[in-house]
Image (cartoon, rainbow, N blue to C red; front, top):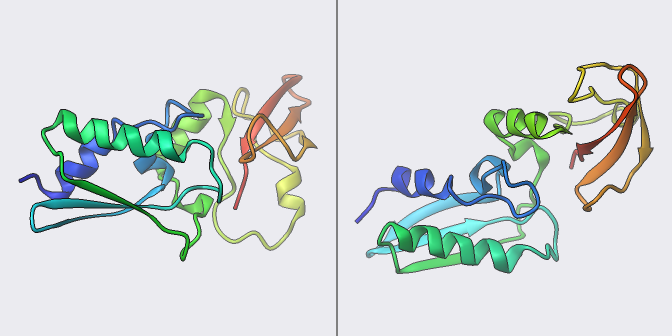
Amino acid sequence: MPTVPEIYHWLEEVKDPEIPVLSLVDLGVITSVAIHDGKVQIEMTPTFVGCPALDLMQQEITEALAHHNVHDVHIVIQYHAPWSSDRITEKGRRALQAFGLAPPVSGVVTDLDILEKSTCPRCQGSNTELRNLFGATRCRSIHYCYDCREAFEQFKTL
């Protein structure tokens, strides 16, 4: 029987369907892994209620673990503790930036003006503005950088 750290390591192979450079572990969607009586139980918290990729993520988790001969897997979707962008790991934040998405602001946001400005993931410029609260997906917003004159998306702070 594998260990919990091995399961987490194998789950690093499962990428977010919308941001394929980010694992579900680094996204913070995998909230716990436990092994009880030879059965692996994985708890997940989706980024949004009604996430359209939830079934695909569960399937890919099951397939990744089956690849490592773990077949008795139970995945629990929980909503009692909502997902927060603070759950994204430091490795995940670097992956977002390398992918061209500005990472979300960390910590509690007390000033909504901070959401208007974002650091450009291309040139690291700060002369930016929010252009649209809604990007390609519900978890992204669109910004414009006046330094490099490029539009970019930011992963929303939740």
